[in-house]
Length: 323
View (cartoon, one colour):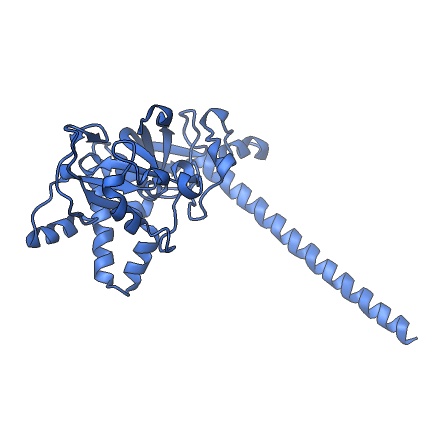
């Protein structure tokens, strides 16, 4: 049997400086961001777990700061400023900022938002956004569903605007086209709106979101064609840290745009894994849980003894005072 000292590294694998996002330490993390990297950044498997399936995919996007909102396209988001301002609701405090990559909160006008072509967003992600919008609509104006979604689910979908520059692209693949009417967040919402107005094609829309929102549904970004569709599409199995029969995921890489050159283009890479606990990992976990319970029992026993000692000293002092 392995000794406890040899088993502990299974639970606590070493960290590697190469994957550190120093903005986390310089600016801090948004309070609503509750995720952390669930596996090593050197390509190895999570300690104490077997990886049955893993997949990764890289996406192209544009990264803007809130101070870019009034600036003209493509260095800013002036064509959508009014719509994005209303959707964000930052001035009214209606929505919580969910952070940028790794949950970083640059504060104020330096907060970041991601823009992608709606057609380039994976189908599973688009479907999830559609479901959230549908729940919001079913919740009613004062319903709990609407209030919860307005508080958290930060994906806004808008129609592209006509621009003088022909062939301008968002996300690098689809040319800009369309009219000034705004689009619904969900595919169902767009279809319902189309009955009254007209159909808005996927290629004529963009999706705007703080990067922190993507962490809520990372497995959906890489599910299609992964060979792990069943696990990755089941968000009930998606956990912040590896446990038995779970799915874990992380944005393992993201680039920064060359803002000094007027660029907003960037890429981000999502990796997800389906894991089960190994026999060695289970033994180490049970050992650690037993050790943790023992430590807690000893702490409670010590606290009781200290309280009893303090009570006896008070009683003895009272007796001496009476004498």
